[in-house]
Image 1 (cartoon, helix red, strand yellow):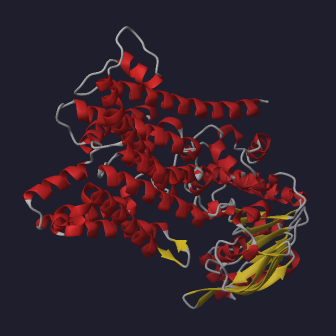
Image 2: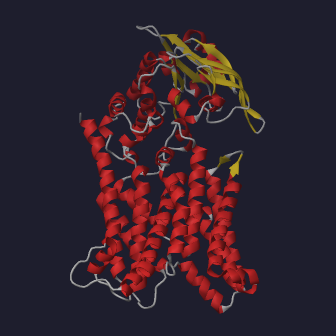
Image 3: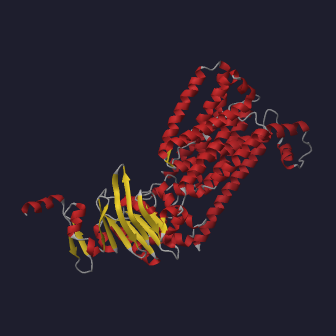
Length: 266
Length: 352
């Protein structure tokens, strides 16, 4: 279990994340949603150990984050950043192999191939990373992160994804989230920051709604993703429909001028 | 299994490259030993190195002494200095995630130069300084380099974390300040001191002896080893600082090892030979273009290639205008810069 209790983080007296309580269970996909500036990325960074929170306790499998060395932490949690620029001409394959630094001196080539096939990046393996498109780079980074936790382990592990689908086309967005859902069976708990509410509705086991650094609501898709709550969190009218044909939700928002038209007629 | 084949070829390629560079270095050592104001045949150099006589002319005692006491220490010194500058350049470029970084950026060279000029200009008028002679110059330059780097580091670190962008700014600021103070010292210098400092700042491997070589080797062996061991951390840092941490790298430790190690080896090199530019900037860059960015190869190859460049440069320095000598810093730039430009242009052509 990845647990955070009463965590708090300020930048210049302004709380960015305020007294949040979170627990991420292995085998579950949890998403964080919320408007810009709600503190989603900061929350993820605090949980990853990038920034030290000023209050509260974070523990991985019962061990306090503060007492974990970088190398030991890397064996139980992987993080995919929003953007990654490489400063030197590395090959794509080398980038993916980097993910396995914490696991030993030599990268297991069968895992490298497996994760790269999974993310459909195996065909770029000998290219230079800098020659790839934005979406391809993002998938290569995902492969690197997957390589870090792909191998078998007896301990529960965690994968933190910061907007993993931001530069991807619709097919690859589904593919990435599909990979994430399948990872659940490897005893891995996944926490993803997502902007696309339909993606969140389709893939989440648990949703955390964040607003102004506070958790407004957390729970199942049914409990959280309702028109009323989404309207409150985003300050924008959002409609939620039950999907025709399959068990799920369809979330829709109208263009701004149509919204005001509705308000005027009403 | 195709994947197993590729990994073995990757590491084979790496070993082959390193062995190749090492071979070139040994070959240059022999060539360089035989050249000079007092020419000695390659056969005799071979006898000197291997102890086996080739041909019918034996090595005379005079030739033996020239090789052992004058040429060999000088060449070894050039290799050690070239290797140090280039390795430090490669590691710092990796740490700063910027291929335009050179060792001077962390303040070593300018700090050394400032202390050296102070010693050259004012040393003769202070009794205990004058007494130290040439050793004093080296010691001053060494201390100056370390002090300035420590300042740069202090300015950019807060609560045990070093901000890399702040480090670059602090380096630029302190370099500018040192430059101004050097100007001030030069303002008070007489002609002899001025000429002395100018030549010091252009670099000089002459005057090498086994004592200096031994000191240089002893001071650099540990930092060189530690920096070479940072290849994984530097590879991970290429993706980003927080990403390197996510992958299990102790980033602050890497920063400390690379900064202190580089300050030590560059400081020692500058103390003994003056400031030799260009090596630390260009060699790592060149290797990345030729062999890729993996620091597992780039770091050791940088050391070897830096040693090669400085051996060539020093051989030219002492043979081109023999019996006089050209400052080595001029030569590294004169052969290095056009070669580098040619390389950049040809890479452009290959890519387009």
